Length: 375
Image (cartoon, rainbow, N blue to C red; front, side, top):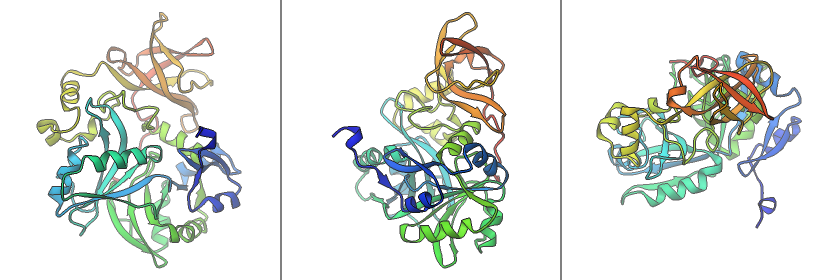
């Protein structure tokens, strides 16, 4: 079967997107809204100022289930470098599923719902979920099982007014901190809410049953502070936030340290190791990796897209852009890519080669736009 013949899946909100005038495109095996009639720029700015509603139901949701937290945590720790054992109830963390060489098979979120001892919830990327579930299932010890939830949808409500919108609907989310997870109910609809997201803004991700998601979507859009947002603005927001896109900024050829994700490896795991690729990753933590993901602020107005070569001022090619585009909040082109460690310091001047032309760029600290997370 060719790629053109491969069936394209839909989320439970596909009809809702079309009714709102969305331009639908294939993405990670699903037909998804890339933008609505107002356009990507307006959607991006609306999310920064108010509350943007994203359908991310294509993501994979599942859970590891064991007899107690310690058993389930140890099972997951054998596959990722994060401290799972020390995760408190009602908390969530970000990590990476690693191969034996320390390369990244996928990045994921895992959480421990209060009162659900022995259960760890997982959210993985849509394009990787089949491979992720197979990999995880193959590496579980006896007594720990994997459940997958194709019957659940996922919404992301992002932006500075997101909290007020949910509070107005009766969800008491005001006391939640960044990366808290709690069960809530809105208009009789039960849901699991995490204070997280992938835009760099404050906001929430809401896991809800497929049968309830259309009702919740419509209810949220009744609030004038909320507008539907497509994949286009989601990408520009996460790029300004300096957040990795799997398969672009990180993949099996990159380690978490090269990717600038060392913050996601907690102290105990750095001391004990015991995860795939630990020898390489702990060495890179101690000595520095050969290359690093960096932010690049591009002079002028022309963006440098993924694949553009990164060069020194004397013309030596030293890397490639992994994500790039126009940053509406920055009001100029921004990019991310990998360069040798010696060239990764903020303030380093480089060139990005676009259509044979050298565009001046400068290494800057990430994120391009300060995060609005509620700590």
